[in-house]
Image (cartoon, rainbow, N blue to C red; front, side, top):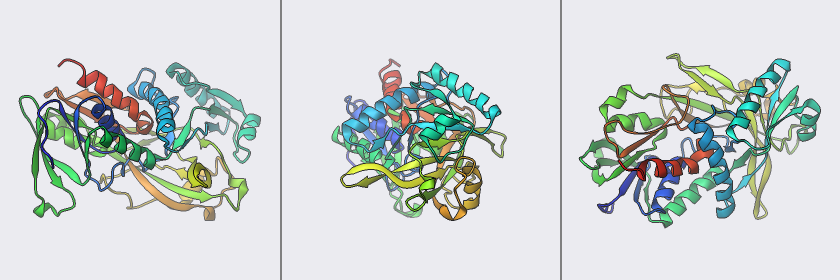
Length: 397
């Protein structure tokens, strides 16, 4: 690795959408940026193993970081995609109710969305629902015209390309194995994850700033920086699994918008209550004749399962029948043989907070931790990057 310059050097641990967005933001504003990702590819964990939905912002507590950064980030993300030719599609979203009791619950999200500044939200009747999505069954729905989908892989590539062009140095297969706080910065000991542990060569580098954007491993990085953090924050890995179906031969399964039921909750083994958006239906983008459009395939998912290992994508996966039972509430024509198991993702639920946690380390003011950055982290990534720059690196300490 090259030597690090002495002034305003920043180490970012984690090369997902948020880490790369921060790398781009800081490198374009004169910081000497080095980003380390332990996986073989950037964004290969949470950032590309999700539904790819650009969220509007009606789910989150007003004045929370999630609410503010989702609404800001959505607008920034649409502009970014247009400017840098990242494939996206503003599909809109409908949150479908099945009875009068559920209809009363979406009033909560309608009011919350208005409080958060979400544009265009409105309740629609069963007849209006049928006009928008003829194949979906429901009692009524909440319609969000600002929701969309993005090709997350292309978004990650664009962020990495722009950060690289601005001078950031980005490394995959590099894992922080030790972090030592100095008087005015940090020494990182970095290992190459392509080598067996007993043969790894450890490189030491020094930085003025450290940004912990390590996703499901952010609590472990925080503990390396400051031993007091070991009992302060705990990331719970929650796996979300997906199926997919194709409607080219069965047009009665076609949808053109994101279709959701009401949010769900999961109580983990330690009693933590985790909120999720439930199994939903999301159209998939495809490249056709030189442009991107909606394909004939639809994602069904995700599930919610608390797991023991932070890299467990496979053990004890749900069968197709699990997805069918939930998806048929929205799409009764769906059959078991329509469904095909697809990928899984792991998100970083934070035991101590349902909101994003972005703050300085209590013992080392030049270290910024980002924990619990799960949905809507992809949507909010550009806003998170600006928030970190303006509220931490550009504020006197």
